Amino acid sequence: MRSPGSAYRHVVNTSVAPPWGPDALSRFLADSERNTRHSAVNFRKEYEQLSSIHALCLSFGEAIHISPDNVLVPSLLMFLSNASWLAGLRIGLGGQCSDVHPSFRACVEYAGYAVHLTHRPELQNVWLERNKDEEHLKRCRQAFQAVKVSESVDSRCPAEAADYRATYNALIDFGAHPTQRALSSRLELEASGTDIVSTVVQLTDDPRVYARFARLGATVGLVALSLFGTIFADRLVGGDCTTRLADLKQRANPTRS
Image (cartoon, rainbow, N blue to C red; front, side, top):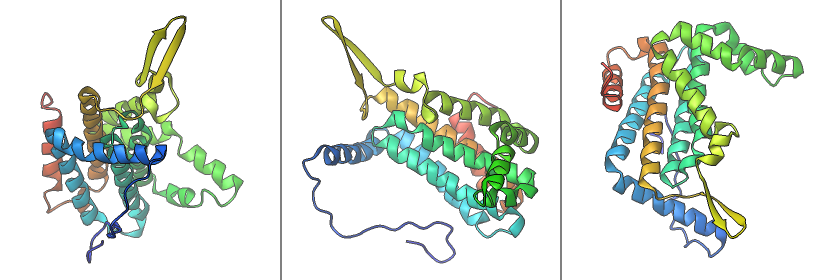
């Protein structure tokens, strides 16, 4: 539901759902649903950190959801970034910890695009007209190459640039692209006579894997918020968003001063 003046909306079907069926897909979804709830209970500290980051995302949204035309697209990308982050959390909390990387990559990439469009506002129409025809598609692809987005982050958000690149590259390496690490991080091999039996983990209950996923989720969320916090710094004046972001970052990386 969406309250008046709210920047976010979600719709929930409140009718009572029937039990899951006996088919393989229903069992998978039921197990994932069960894992999601147990994750929030069994990894309370990590869950509370992610919940605090989400609360800050909502506060950012309330601060910037009414935007002038020149930053309309970058502000809208913040909501897409948050939606991708939530998708990654939903997948990971359900036990698909190795499958979060494409969603988390989208979260970070939306933030990078927002920086790129803020740094080079003339590209807003290029992005909006991407699918007008082949020529516009080519122009948009050239304008939004990953290296060019990264250059804008370097220029516009120098304090966040290193974390942005490191996080983006790690997400690519571990599954946002089809890489060998995306396979090896979830592959189990066992000798059976002269054969090798291979198993690819879909759902996990390994606490070490959950802990890594939670750290990654926090990192991704904070990197994205840090970029949005820089380009929309003027919209956050007068509130506590900046202070809360700094506190969350310090708690996530206590060794950094």
